[in-house]
Image 1 (cartoon, rainbow, N blue to C red):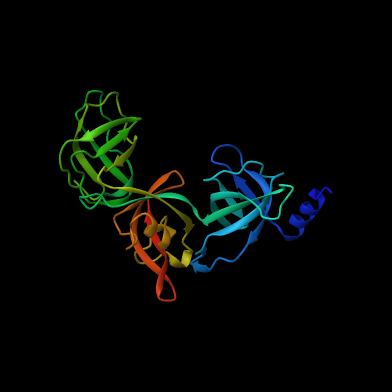
Image 2: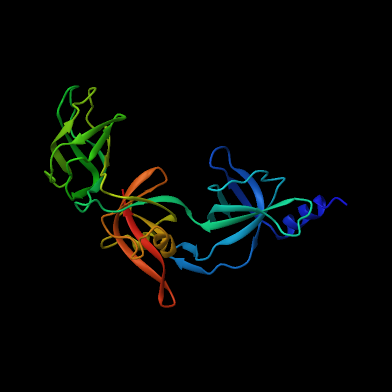
Length: 280
C-alpha cells in the first residue's frame, strides 16, 4: 500500500508552513510537524526555546537534510543539529530533524587589552601606496579601548599589522597607526576597515537578533542598537559558564557588533538566556 497520499494529508492538516535553508543553495518551502515540547521563555519580542526539539518533514520536500542547515517555522528559526529516520516510518517518507533554537553566530570575547569598541570603521583620509601609517575612525559611536601590537587592520582585502599600542586620538578615531607592511595600494578616504584582535577568542553559538521597540530607545539604548538573545546553555557548552561580558563582540548577519550591556533572563532560579545590547 502506498502511504504517500496519507502522509501528504497528515502534513497538510498538522504541519506548519516552514522553510528549509541548506548550508549552500536555495531555500525550499516545506511543512514541518513539531514533536515534543521545549520550554519557551519570552525575551522582549524574541521567543526562546530552552530545550532541543524535533521536527518531522517530508522527504519529498526535503530529500537530503544536513547538519548546520536552518529550519524556519513561522516566526521561529532553528539550526539542524542531527538528522535521523522517523520510527515506524517503514516506507521512509519522513525525516526527523533535531534542532536547536537560533542561528549560528560568533561570540568573540574581549581582547586581552579589554577590547576596542566602536565602528563601523573607515579611513579618515586618503593614503598613498607605501604609507607606513594610517588613521581610522568610527562612523557612529565613540571609541573605547586601545589597539595593541599584533592587532590586524584589513583594508581593501589586504591585512596590515599594528606596530604599537595606540589609544584613541579623538572621540571617534585612532590616528597615525604604524602598520606593516606598508600600504600595498592607495587607499581613499572613507575606505572600509576591519579590526581583528587576535587575543579575542571566538566561540560559535546560536542566537537570534531583534530590533528594539521605539519605546526602548532611551537612556543607554541608542537608535540603531539591536538586541541579541543567546541561551545560557550555549555559553556553558563552549566553556563560558558565566555568560557574556560587555566589551566582547558578536558576528552575525555578515556584520560585527560590539556588546554594550548584558542582561540575564531567568527560568525559575537559573539563568535561561542572555539579552545582549549590541551596536555596530
